[in-house]
View 1 (cartoon, one colour):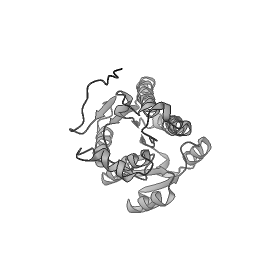
View 2 (tube, one colour):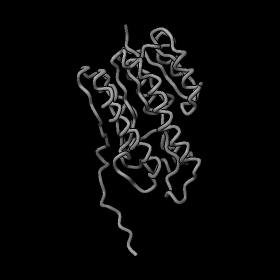
View 3 (cartoon, helix red, strand yellow):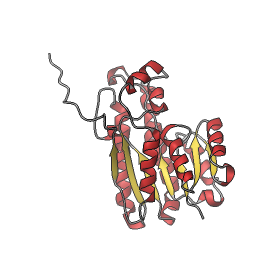
Length: 250
């Protein structure tokens, strides 16, 4: 029987590419997100109800999330891999200029939503000796101007992953934090409020990571022998590295 992966935030970017990668290897997938039309179109493209199931809900809503997970039936209820990909960044300005509602949205999505669906699925993952892949970011380790709350949420994801790893080591459940650097996807268009010119400037001449690169990384982690755990994996494009510390001079 094919294995099954549940992928949050599957309507675009890393999530969509990851779903496509797993299906190419014979897996079934449960696709979650808020945009029903995109989910259903992707599920159809990936083979329809025999291979892909679309679950439309807002991961920030605990009741919606619980109802969606409780409603899984048949092979789709037996999840081998949870890919916690749903997340977002809003705004690029300094903390003193930021919108508190945007901060709250990032926390509710990147932290609260992630821990909610993880807890709801843990019993099943333990029973199947499964895998949790959490999408963090290089921002979990490396701060930058304008990163503020987004970086804080991804630092939580990284540390939560390590804590899960510690708690679940006796249960045979693997946990990995994937931490991408500069990556080209709709994520950045959301962050810039739909500003296409700003989006283009971010990637101009940089040869950034593509969603397929991260999907390949996630699949590689999932395909390793069950006694091998990748604790965390930081991934950057070759063009990206570290700059000197900034210094404000009076």
